[in-house]
Image (cartoon, rainbow, N blue to C red; front, top):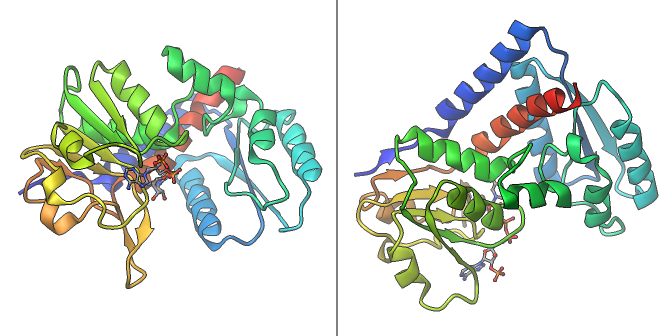
Length: 278
Ligand code: NAP
């Protein structure tokens, strides 16, 4: 039987540390969250980010723009926020409506306020291992792995998924900690055999019940980044939990695993941004 990795508890510890540092140093830290349109999932994420700001003693500034907002209007807002000293971090909630080019918006955010670490400057810094911000979800996964007391050095790690937001930076953070890393994707041959090599298996695919017991080595650490809806419309991850859990040594639940960590790491990045700008 696997031990559950409690993302709620680990994320609470991260948020408590952020709050303690802000309070003890009397810092004024601000995060601007921009949401465009009516995407319900985005609205939930934004509300959770606002709540986390309250918990951490970070001032949040919310900008809710209508669905028909033009790219120029959004870029003008980003310029304003880039120049506002009360705003240390800027987060533009993705996805954006079709008329707005996401790459242009990310490129416009000042790299020292880019708390999602999506800007090409920050992506490049992560690649060379000299970074100001770590991408929130992969950084949260590293915290969860550390919480098990596992030393990643020399471990076989397999990441399923190669997105710019999760898969690629995830692999890079594991590599920085001296893991032997394999990245899998939809063209990978004999995925199950590759995954069975993993001491640490991270799934970031976005498909319910994707990771089955035959893909998991006995005693592996299994981290489920996926956030999906099952047939009953319940939130679930990528991992077929019931059959994988007995084989794993540690496993993250969904919900209550990686999700809360992403927001906690955003809070940590916002504090880091404050220092970068001081
Ligand atoms: P994405 O951009 O859609 O990437 C999915 C990846 O999975 C792609 O690289 C794709 O390969 C790969 N894939 C798809 N089908 C596959 C298959 N049959 N075999 C092997 N690989 C396959 O998604 P994402 O943005 O990285 O997000 C992944 C999941 O994580 C989603 O469920 C998302 O909601 C969740 N997520 C959670 C958090 C959190 O805070 N918990 C944060 C971000 C994302 P190709 O590149 O070849 O197409």
